[in-house]
Length: 345
Image 1 (cartoon, helix red, strand yellow):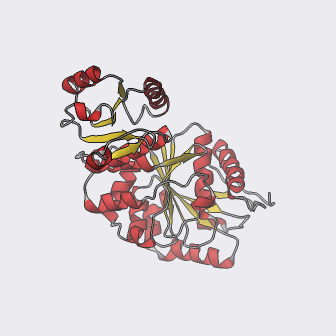
Image 2 (cartoon, helix red, strand yellow; image 1 turned 90 degrees about the vertical axis):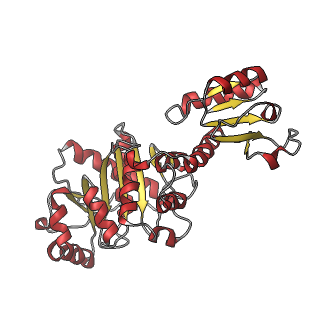
Image 3 (tube, one colour; image 1 turned 180 degrees about the vertical axis):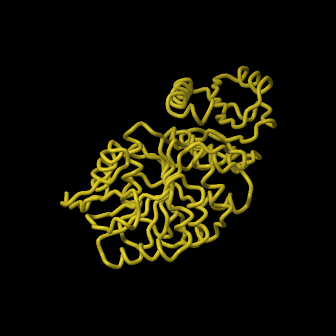
């Protein structure tokens, strides 16, 4: 990315920030004079160029894939906003990077099928709704982040409670679904552009509409997993409490699966049915860890290994996740052997 502006202080600010905080996403070059800009555009090819109003009409930018006018309400643009696509100069630099990646991803001809998988993929699922599955998923994600892992949390629930766990509410995942459906653009780059980060966990915000998730095919799910898994050490996928074809596709590509059950008789009955009457379980049982949530007591023959979480007496979702993540840490120290709690915390 080339940033061309006569504002030397601004040029230094954006260069330093991108180099320090976004070097994994963007390689930035800076120009602050017309002669240097002309020379740079002649000798190098840039995917993206952000050029201010004093320079943009004086150079040949035909070789730039994505050209954006560095725009400010306080500066005279003399009709340039009608001629060039603009980007607000005075916003958070992280927002500038996010917008640039999102726009360029839609133009990119790179084949997203080429993304290589990197992360360990953990799916979190239950046949029972309201069992605390998202708390379990995010507690696991937080535990991994606390251990120095790069963690990506992907929520594929139809109706999600994750806004209650994260501070920042960013751009919707719906644009990713649209790109997958249209089979064009660079999905990985788009995800990098719109993803948020909180408490050491990278995540995507929920869809604009329930129907947006419904259009995903099994192939879309596979491509989404590959793209997210190429960006982290651990990918945690939070699933709705249905066992449809898309859920089974996630199971197929997961390295481990956390099956969550609870204290009620109905939850154990449904889990028992899934394990004994559904042929899906036979295909995944070697990946499964049973999670007895909220102080539940579960018959040992259901599944091994098993981890039992306490009932956490707090209405703050982040506090619940933090406490449960510490339980995960103890469980890991025991070599993923059974760990049970008798009391509420």
